[in-house]
Image (cartoon, rainbow, N blue to C red; front, side, top):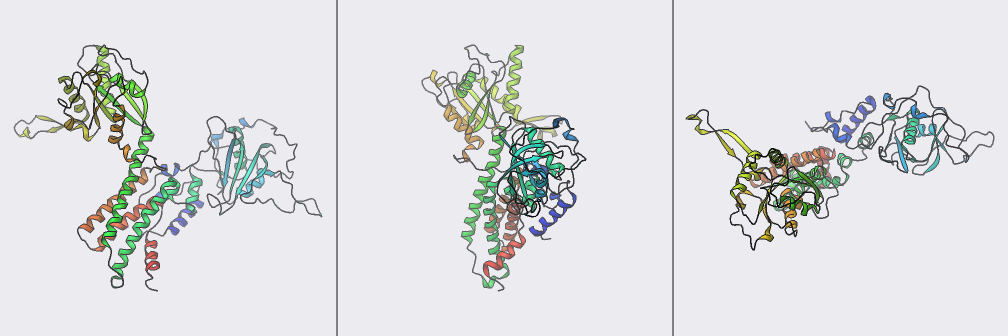
Length: 566
């Protein structure tokens, strides 16, 4: 069954939205891969708690504010009821505080309204300082106040009791030249949270409803102002549209030849293959940003492990340019996990200096060893430190195998169970498949020369770096090794203007898989019908990122581009 046109989809969502709000429109039921409520709430602007609504209505004020108007309250409104007891109305005009609350007050705060009654509500609460024209016969105003779109006006906001709430700048953005393509009014108030909440309360009492999280952006999407990609990540939208347009062009070329083979020239297979390869490369680069986003949010943990007195604490101090860890010549000085924070390629990194791991009868040191093992198990990168003076020792092998076994050993039923039914064999998986591991040969200043002999680098470690914690030699190479192992080197030096979220990542993976299948179909010289299946899958996946449909566009493209049926 073909997917419904985008216009029909938006019309249906809008109908449900207007009929049943404050319930969030069931957008998730209309998409093949539904959006989570978290995806839409991610779009929201900061908003305050729900202000209380009073039973009395707001009265009109016929007098304009004069120069002598004072911002004096007749009563203290901070204690007029609990803000959390609000019951939201059914008005289709929404209002919310759109500047951040909770921190130090800013100079200016903004209350925004959007909807068909935004202007009418503004007439009730706002009085412009501009003098109005009057009729010659009577002293009444010639007409109701009507704002001019995108023209700022200065005035006062009144509450339902006739009290002056605040002096504001009112900015009208009338439909369709607004963010939501509805009438939008912004009241720029003083930044105090008390002022903002009282201005918002006045708007709610005049007929507005408190906006749901992300509702301004949701209305922008429903009204065609932006697509889902722009709503979630504006910079990513251009790339998705580019991918999708390329898929549609290929699909158009192929389907046109399926239906009108005699009238079309043969396909340029080499050009199509090159275009697919370029798209796959771009998709891979976009997927890299999902990992980068995670790293930016949570950072990296690097555990520095090793025998006692191999220079782990000195390495942490040199790398972090601090004296976080105590350093002495006495083995076993560090008894607990010591943390230090650095940055690698803009990513926050927590270095964990651990106690030297060895067999010990000391109760305190034994606890430190246990904590070291726990730190290594939870780390994103493990740095195994050895001394260049001692070389790789039997104790180093025992330590490394101990950590590796704890990290990745699996118990499987042995083939010997036929002869010995209760026999099990431990099969140890290489640690490199789970956690990147770097061998750091420290204290190179204490020996004349260091070589790889005695270090089983290729089999057990991803990288091997020589360092001197005293001089700082090798630390830059260590950072580069970490960057390469976690994939930071795949991010361009200028960074990214955007990163993709989980929903977008899932659809990009779907796109990538479809393009890989398409390449396979081309290599196997399968019929063109098979090509269209994979291309349509890629196009639909990209369409779900942006919220677009594909069926009508493909048909429209065929007839408009090739003039078939003219």
